[in-house]
Image (tube, rainbow, N blue to C red):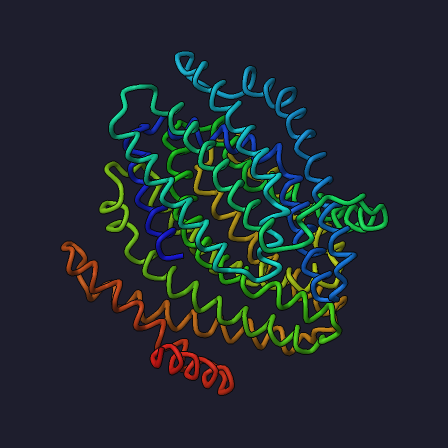
Length: 487
């Protein structure tokens, strides 16, 4: 995780420098469009992970094999559907709606086609990555992640030495790496997991259950895609490429931060689902709340130093910092911290197959968010409103919608939910007050001042979070630290 985090930040710096603001913005717009076309992938990915993990929890090997075959067929069908959408509606949008420099029309066409290819590979890879995560073989997940990180470093090397069109070269190398990674996942699964050896006859009852589960998930993912990737398309319509580039950089920071955090969630979520599958409901609930609190503290540990030192961090990281980047990056990291419970509380919903209410809420909130942004931009308001509205949506999901659904459908009590939430917010508030006080005391006009501020904010988070933990969790953390030190 640390290696991937470092590589992501380093390669983003070089890619922006070598591509330039306009080409970097074009790349983000094209991928934003493909992201909207491939919304079904996110839906099916969640369903795939849930059903494979659930069958492992019930220890029914025959049904596990039939489940894998069924989801593999579903992903093949989905890949064909995405190709159809991409070569019809998507291609029309690129040619007739996107605001593209006439001199870069050919490059836009090339990277669009390669983006479709990369997306198809990613979709077909999902059943295999889901199997690795469900079996909790995190070492394989880590090793292949390292291979992917090394591949990104190779891209940077190629951009430095070549004189061909750098944007086309960049996306071509991305496709090659995605193929290598997909092959490694397939080989690893074939060697380790019996259910991936043969594709048996798909089970219609399992397929029906997956479709039923995915039906409401489709609604939620369409809405979420519109509110995230749709923002990029709105920026392309209403603002200069510089704004799109600034949004792209802030999302790179968010992606680096959340890849670290999501790898922790990936290690926890299968256990929550398996505990629920075998009837250990209280243990599943306890792990949900404890992991939500722990991950919130990890978000503070990574996010608070980033927010406070963002101007200096970006000046060190990037050769040229586009306008709005600092504000975008600070707000998106803050949003990542605040929406922790949005992600943490979704896992028990998928385990229990109770996602209808969440999907309905997603439609109402995300479509409203997109419509409001369109109106605000149309009447001349600035791009930062995208982040303000995003923060409001995250707060609604994390602190009202998700707790309500867990209370109504999955036997969580409001007391235990808001005890966890208020505990985290209390720690976050104390950390913010102390850290911003230190921000005005420690000058950051030198590299040592920057390092000192980062170190001070990390210490503040560790001390305040540890002091704020309940006694049982504090003892758990101490025991784990002792074991690590002995090793």
